[in-house]
Amino acid sequence: MARVVIIGASIGGLPAAYEARALLDEKHTVTVISNVESFHFVPSNPWVAVGSRKRKDISFALGPVLEKKRVEFVHATADRIEPEQNRVMTSKGEVP
Ligand SMILES: Cc1cc2nc3c(=O)[nH]c(=O)nc-3n(C[C@H](O)[C@H](O)[C@H](O)COP(=O)(O)OP(=O)(O)OC[C@H]3O[C@@H](n4cnc5c(N)ncnc54)[C@H](O)[C@@H]3O)c2cc1C
Image: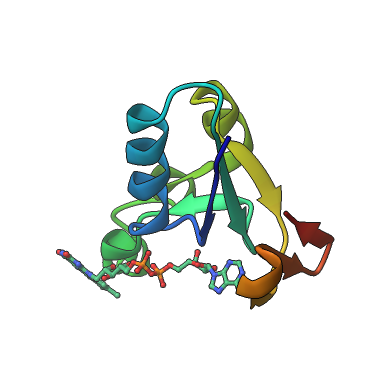
């Protein structure tokens, strides 16, 4: 059984998590570690700056969406990757 761990849940991390989940069967785990609780569509920042969009229009809470996709969500900062131990150390402890 494999565990795929993705650090960051922005434009790179979120599609990576979705793809990994779609490719792997359910005996494997996909985990996203993000230091922010919301996805935020960075390219739309200028629209918020000029008042054409509200911040809530370009972001959503990660937890419920990832749960629905059967992706584990860890809201924490990844501090250290320890390949020899096959783990990631975060501000909330170890992700094995
Ligand atoms: C105004 C603007 C317009 C743009 N327009 C376009 C466009 O039209 N087309 C295009 O292709 N690109 C565009 N880009 C670029 C695009 O937004 C970036 O390439 C993209 O956001 C990069 O995504 P990323 O997931 O690699 O990194 P990021 O968006 O930087 O995401 C990294 C994520 O990881 C989290 N993170 C970082 N360190 C840790 C850690 N140690 N532990 C846990 N989480 C962590 C961060 O909080 C963040 O959520 C634009 C950028 C800007 C600013």
